[in-house]
Image (cartoon, rainbow, N blue to C red):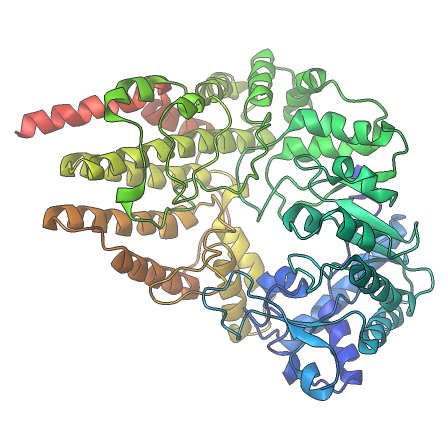
Length: 638
């Protein structure tokens, strides 16, 4: 981070140990915090007050070790000249506090993505910022951190209203809340500066200009800094008169949930921060990155990390010309062409859609297949031969399931992949090239898989058992082949994720708990019933070898099994039966102890070439050819 110029990093590790000591002062025991802290994989949501207890309880050894780690992190940050941002009290409190302080203004928040508002996990408790107890706890938390760490940068993050709507929209009340939140920090540190996410202004329609201005002006100017969290897509600085005079940081969010999807908006990244800084009376004080997950799309983070050092917009075409040489270590003109294509397609998303990966393989539709709308059969050959980006002219797919996001010509991207494959021998020794090649091959194949799925659905809706059989098997074969592709690079292995979680454990029980946390976060959470899937299923989906072969493939096979059975019996699709078996598969998979490799195997270049020849050669007409193959098989069997 220091080498990239980052000087204001979040430093949130170890705070559960601080909270233990703080709440002890208010007569809350360690056992009473067991259903307050989330599990290791869910601490981000627990800390924001979205859920409680899910994945826990946290072992004391985890809490202690994280505090030790935090002290090492802070020492290193200070050594590098950084100003670490510590957490502050946002009002999120354990249930036990209500019984200890019955007169305190503590309210239970609304359900946050739970199926049936199960109080074991949802509907956390919020202490009203205007209550005197709020100031006491806020002060105690700041003081305890200073006691543990010995110093502070005086900058604290606090997001009381993150996806939690205030109970009253009166600007005076909002102003009083904001002032009280800040007093909680200031009472422990006279020099406190409140760093606040601006996500609430994008996410919640509650925040009209009067409410927004009331919150921002509840703190003296200069004592609050706002993160314009999603500025590359939905900049708030433009619509808020630059946060009504409050300093802000232009931030790129880019990625939700660590999903693996090639995606970006390079032109906006290269010009947005400069435009914001140069605007008249600008209150912008920096640039930032606020992704939910990293380890994907290196080009996006490479460019964004430069923006703090530029005073003029970057010429992205010139920058792209140099990129493959920098990344792979030698200039190859064909790869420069390939990256220009990727820049104008994948990395030029301007439709304003939040890119949460809903490709069919990793986010399988949980709907009755009869309600999924597909293109007219009469337009079938035209439809398949068209560029997939032109599908807006056809009948729109039903919004009954999350339609996969597609904003570019797949034909162009497949051509870029061909350039990678044709010139790969010259840079096959480059680890960064192999990673990019696997990722690009994956991107092309999963968009193709979305179309194969529609062929299955069309066969179902036209009662064509052989078409459903043909394409469902084709889909499952593709999932298996994708797993082989992903296994060829260390950056796409499920085993690395699971083993890193298990290594933190002190004993076999902790290892089991930590592995369950890791498996659950990437599949289905935060709750479900026997026949009703979690509303947060596949939120953290990943294209990882092992996950496709062991979970995504079997899940799709269950759906196709019920699809075919319903056709044979002449009955409607048994949605509840499908859900029951899928949820059972998920629960068993999350509790499984199956070990997956942490070492890549196979030649990425050869595997990519094989898959290109098998699935993507003549990509415009590939599905037509397969359809003709299917009809030939069908005719031969009649």
